[in-house]
Each structure stands twice: as structure tokens, then as C-alpha cells.
Length: 146
Length: 175
Image (cartoon, rainbow over all chains, first blue to last red; front, side, top):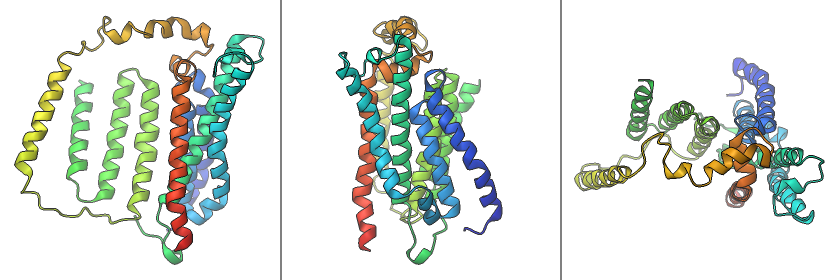
């Protein structure tokens, strides 16, 4: 499976662009279609594509299990943390206007920007985790042609 | 015209996915189904939903289905199909008839007087730009007006990831 040079070269070329697009979708969510969820899925898919072509061992070396484990909880913590920050600053939970920016529009913008990043991190990490834990890793390095 | 074509293709994809014996092909057909569905959402001007459908439905779901297939057999187990065919056909037709009957009460498509357009939608349309400060109304609803719900959804995804780790990772260490 891993000896196909066309597949390897194309993947190596594609993955950076897919990841760049994923970041664009996450960051651009407040002014265009998309957002943390879609961008996170695309980001996770780029790692999955890498793992499909280069094998799960090589894929896990790029995104080790501890990293995805931590990131999937960090995303939720960023989201809930921004909500809590609004609460501590004397407003309602997730009321971005309380955030310390001069313009409430700017505060809303940055608040949403922050939670989109949180959603993206969690979604990407969980998608990668589900793929690596579900996909069959053949005993003794044997990969099943599926 | 193109809508009728898309919907016909959707039905064909669904039927093909049910009828196929090869589960890998069935998964790929479902991916095509989701991609067609994404086009339908775009035709309905719901670009955010289309984006989600294309990335989640056509992309990641297919990958996860194939990943799950790698743990099981590719072919569908043959079961005798003659026995319960007639009663289940009647049941399906009845359920379908009830569902169609239920749609008769629904407001017409693109009806401006539909209740959904008069509850909170006007507030979102008028207020999202200056209350929240982002241009994309869908993002404003998801992240600000319905921020709790999105936090809940993110927690659901997080829980799914943790469950997969708890259920599947341990087995690997043992074996």
C-alpha cells in the first residue's frame, strides 16, 4: 500500500493546501460560510488522508495520541473559558460584549473568533482520534486492503 | 428542472446503497448521496448547511465508515428476504402515507407567512449585524444567540472522542 509513488507525492502536495484551507474556513467563519466545525473536519481529514496513504504508524508520528487527546479537551475548555470570562467580567455566560475591547462589535468578533478556534480544535482532534482508534491496524504490520 | 434531476439522483443513490451487497461500494454511494444533498442545500441558498453536508456527510462519514469496515467483512451477510417482506412493505407504506399526510399541514415552500419566519427570525435578521458584530448571520446565530447549543454540540463531539478512546484504545493494549 505504501509503495505507490503517485499517491504519496500527490498527498504530500495536497495536505498543506488542505490544512491551509481548513484554517481559512475556521478563521473566516464569521464573514463567510463555514466555521469551526467545518474547518475542524477538514483539518482532521487532512491528517486522516496522510494516515491512509502513509500508514497509521507514520500518521500517528505526525499527530501523536497524547496531542490529540489534549487538544480535544483544550478546544472545549477554550469555548467554555471564553463563556466563563464573560461571566467573570460581569455579564451573561457567552455574552461577548463584556470582553475587554473598546468596540462591542470588535468584542463580538473576537469572542466568536475564539470559540470557532475552540470548536475547530476539538472537532479536528476528535475526528483524528476516532479514525485512528477505529481503523484496523493489522497484526504484524499487515494492512488490509479495504 | 435541475432540482428534479437532483432529487431523482438522491433517490437512486439511496436505493443503490440499500441494495448493494458490497459494503464499501455502499459507503461510497452514500458519500455521493451526501454530495448531491450538499448541492441541494446550495440550491436552497443554505451554504453553511451545504458546507457541513459536504465536509461531514460526504467526507468524514465515508472515511469513518471505511475505517469501521476495516474491522469487519466487506460483504453483507445474506439473510432470507422472502419471509417478512409483505408485512414490512405494508408497514413502510403506511408510515410513508402518515408522513406525507403530515406534510399536508405544513406551510408552502418559500411562504413568507410561515410561522418559522415570524418567531425569532426577524430579530436575527435585523439584529445580528449590530448586536453581534459579524456579517455571517448563520455564524451569529450559532455562536452568539445559540452559543449554549454550540457549546453543547462541541461537548457531544468531545464525549464521542473520549468514548472511542475508552472503548477501543484499551483493547489494543491488551491484545
